Length: 116
Length: 161
Image (spheres, chains in turn purple, red):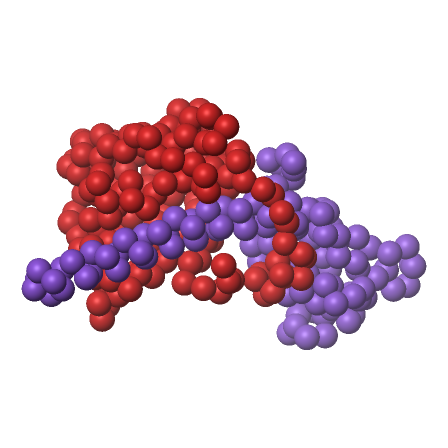
């Protein structure tokens, strides 16, 4: 299980839409900073700043190649953080599914009682 | 369960979780399901296999509420709190505390019920005492008795994108 501090770094890194888009791009394969900057109306230094946050959170790693330093997605922290969100979500989906059924029943009762 | 459905869960800042869900029912019914014990226990019965063993809710300012659930293993999880504000049929504010104080202090829960064309949008804003408490809350109540099968990363990214 990740430590609260590690989880924190992950959540913080994921809080930004540009960084999420970068991760989505990296899910398709490695990319250089230049390639990552292309689809965004952003300078390379601005993208590099986002990459630094993602790297510090352990969400990406940078290659050794001095020229290109390709970015690569690191799956584990993301899976851990969102795994919890998914479980939390699953829990509430289940509860609300039951609430839906109950509300249907109450609506029928009200209709029968002519209160609607 | 499909992503992008009517349920959204966001973490807008370090200490909050916001749960938003639409219901195909007028809000007086949704409000009742949140504030009448006989109705609460019909749906808020915990994770799969759990049973709700205590369900008390006094719908008035200063009123207390208390819920307990029992896991198949025999483990009992309890929580309770005090109603700070209740405005039928649109708002409930409560201060809550789990028995096992993994939330690190008081948690404030705001329920807002909004109705349009016979449908209700519920927004539950939960504010924890700290960042750690919020992150801890995301692990519970499913830490016990539920399987942690992580979705494939691709699914996760589809949801995030």
